[in-house]
Image 1 (cartoon, rainbow, N blue to C red):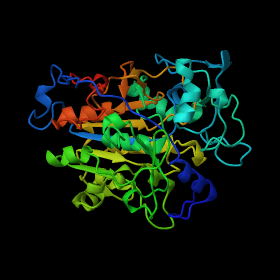
Image 2: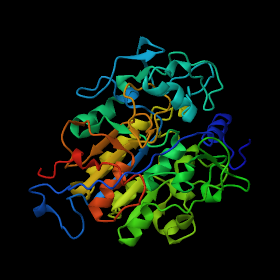
Image 3: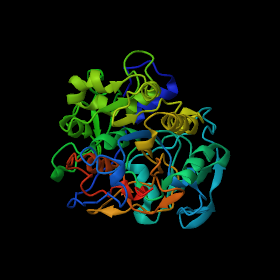
Image 4: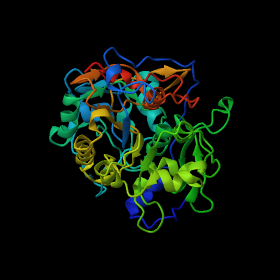
Length: 430
């Protein structure tokens, strides 16, 4: 298989290909759980006709490729571990940097796929992380004990500072047992189900980046292997719900055509949605480059709901060889705090996948199928519970659930139905 769409570096080319060689699955959806996110004392501070809480703006900041233990190991009050199981024996977690390099001469990369998950999960024993090989395809040198690692405190300090001042979730689980392509789709659609639920066919990647703009011959990769249709989907997404309710939204993303396209284009989920790419939303609600979020905050143009996609260098993905992710996230938070919107805004920072790194908490099993590994989630807002560590069981659609309930949008009819809203992270009596 070859990548023909962009002139990436060799490392980026291999990463782009491998992003389509993932596997994942979902689970059956139980009935909708309702949640009353209104709390006593909040009514005087917002208009009930617009939102059900004082939150008038939600900014979803997308990050990539880290487990909870990898970024927050040892965080006070959080469920973490100083050691992990490796085939029945305990080994200590060792420090690494966000830009750790190895024998390959580039960012050390671990695979994140259904095969990776099954190996590491080992039927719930969580002891197979030492069986991986490096490389996004898992075909490099043996990784040994490398996945049993946490990022040094000097580099995670910005995240820890945000957690101590606002709220951190330590039981947020990725939905799809796959890497960042699928995780990004879940953050707008709740699922990557391609066929009727009885078919159990989920999209976990694509043979090229570009979504609806991908070159001829591009196909999706399906759970269980095999190829599906082009990555240009008719899925119902949050765009449908927001548009129907006349609630403003934007996707702050990357230029994903031409020779200089960034690998972060793999996380431009709305480019894979046919109704968005070929409809009015593309020119109205998709904003390029992602740095436009700063001018919109400054100039009073922030929509009610937004998603921000990182460039490869701004991401925490280990293939980036960069340590700029925490500073990038902090810059968005700082801009929001300095804007006119801060008093009614929630910034939600969520990681799409675990990146292959060790985590000590077995994912919950829903409908006979487990969720994926734990990932961090930060909720930053004047209404966030200060220094709070939520042990509530969330999945990525929990963010969508909060948005749906806050604006009275109804449901996507996807994993948002079963998900628990992140309303537990707020104190609206403040």
